[in-house]
Image (cartoon, rainbow, N blue to C red):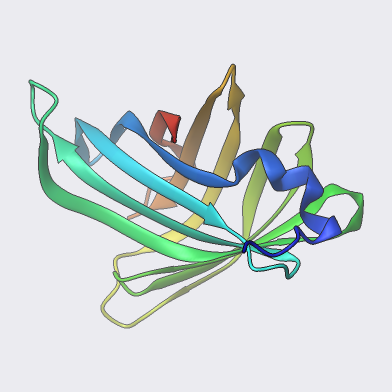
Length: 161
């Protein structure tokens, strides 16, 4: 039996479930690429969502290739549509984002970025998530390796039944 959704999560209810799809990526020091992605948003009755994301490179025919990135964390909801996102990456980076949800659109900007000694240089991120019809679209801008904040990833995902 699934627990009752915490009232603070009502504005994020549209994210709940599993999503799959494809996107494109690039950056000044990275060749453009296509990727496949799975995202999951779950809850346990507390005022946060449990979030995981995995990506794989896609070949020219759309077949899954080598794994790319993975991240996991918690989307913490507060009154007035305020959102905090706490993320961890296996590459040695941890991030805290702060943002807002308005209708079916979430905008988040990094407040804190922490890196291990061996992690690549990464200083800031900006994320947009929102419904495009029944699909989940998102865009991710980053500042890394001496580059200012600019487009890195975008994808459109379909809800998995």
